[in-house]
Image (tube, rainbow, N blue to C red; front, side):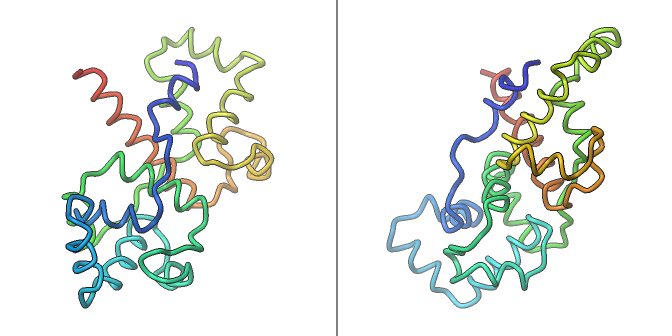
Length: 192
């Protein structure tokens, strides 16, 4: 499968943190007055920080440093991208369960992501042909760059082989949610 075909199954728009949190807690279906009532309720701020911390696999202290809750205007782009994939991959019901229970954010290595997105479904000889192609490195770097919304140069800094041993863990969480979002979209397209 061409990497650009794979990417079109991933979300094009990245929600603002406040919109993402409204989705997570099911407030996006409420009237503006009801949303305001929910957002000013005691404990909502703590729930937002806890949920973002769990889903993104980062410390609560880091989340609190992103600015006023629930806007989190200083949330980094990689976290916003991850939230976009989470919104596609997980329903509000699942996210509510995550908020109220122990949860460890999933991780996928670059190699696992590349195998699923570019090589899955290919025969051994087809995989060998794809991997041996001079275009393969460019394809997987483009796929990772567009999925993570970062530069190829940054990816080069993580290592020269497909394992990318220096890739930060938070990007592995992003790849896991991107893969889940891709699978969900693919299932929806098959069912349609």
